Figure: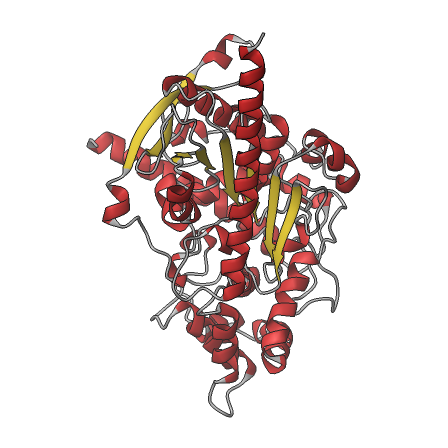
Amino acid sequence: MNRSSLIQSQQWLISILAIIVLFFDTTCISAAQAKILPRLSVKRPLFLGEPAKFSESVSEDLQTSYYHQTLDHFNYRPESYTTFQQRYVMNFKYWGGANASAPIFVYLGAEDDLDYELPAFGFLTDNAPQFKALLVYIEYYGKSIPFGSRNEAFKDASSLGYFNSAQAIADYAEVILYLKRKLLAENSPVIVFGASYGGKLASWFRLKYPHVALGALASSAPILYFDDITPQNGYDFIVTKNFREVSESCYRTISKSWSEIDRVASEPNGLSILGNKFRICDQLNNLGELKEFLERTYDIAAQYDDPPSYPVSMVCGGIDGAPEGNDTLSRVFAGVVALRGNFSCYNASYTTDYPIETIEGWNWQTCSEMVMPMGRGDNDTMFPPAPFNLTAYSRDCTSLYGVPPRPHWVTSYYGGHDIELILRRFASNIIFSNGLRDPYSVGGVLKNISHSVVAIITVNGSHCLDIRGATSTDPEWLVMQRKAEVEIIEGWIAQYYADLHAITKLNDHV
């Protein structure tokens, strides 16, 4: 990169960070404003010990390619035909080949760079040998950027407007159909997989493109966290429940810490005192920054409360294990250290826990179509009140992007209301998997809708745990959950082969 390009990139990053800070400030300044939407991702924050990349042995099997993707699938204006390079990765190691009509497993990328997501998505590589499946991973965020650069793509709503779920699943369909033609694998059944936001996309893909995908596994996909389908306080209610089940004293300490934070903040130099107390690297600009940092810490612990470390237990172990005589805020800080590690200081910004490109894209999506109304009242969770106010939410998004969100578009386009009645006859071959310790499970499908639209739940499961790679420390209930998912997919593929054989035999006699 030359010096001019480097300067432009630095200036662009600074401007984006300024926008993000503005967004956070307008949504977090007071406890009465809306909760920042917790990240939907299969990938854990790095401080939870997430591997940064594939092992070398797996990486050797991956082949990276790019597809000339159409910018806009739903219009016929000249600019709609603009193309960009969409990245996809293939693993042929286990594939039985097109002649055998061996299946194709497709991972639908979500709101992370593919390099960042793939190491966490071990379910496919674990089960590909059994199915003799070709593995395909299609990127959504990351290097697959239209308009030549992320700077141009994220410049304003005119370019960001193409960045939505309907365009994304149309992109997936184009890539899959192209690969089937290229590999002469028209009879190979396709199963799509997605987790978290990608799980939403996988289920919606099966509904919108049943001719492309035989079935879908949607892990931890809160497709019902829209409109008034799910209680607004559902997420925080589960977070609170998780902490209270682990330790009543931990729950009580967190609950009363918010008023203590308010009390200290009201003192002279209160923000400086709090910043020093919690070792915040930069000076706190407002009280909301600290509260959001603590809330995010608890949310992450609950959402990714995986075995064997169990982050909620780590936080509560720090809080309850603090030396006798420590005050409430010292105990809370001990919980932060127990989870995040012992450092000289902590960056309270949201940008330290996730890649900047993910935050940029997800901010736009939650300000356009992914309006998931999260809020809470007085004393219904361990957090201070933060009711969801659509008017204020729309105002802030309009101020940031120049266009208001469309809060009811997801349920208009994909459905959600009366899902049991609607999908009972219309849909088929979808697995909705959820762990009930995942706060997002409250917005998921938690019971069977039909014999082939099924819910697989685990009482102790966390966010996207089933879709991750198996380990020697996995509890028996997790092993059985994955086994059930594999058996269902086996049934779909067996029935497909039976149908294919019957139709081929029938056509041969015509």
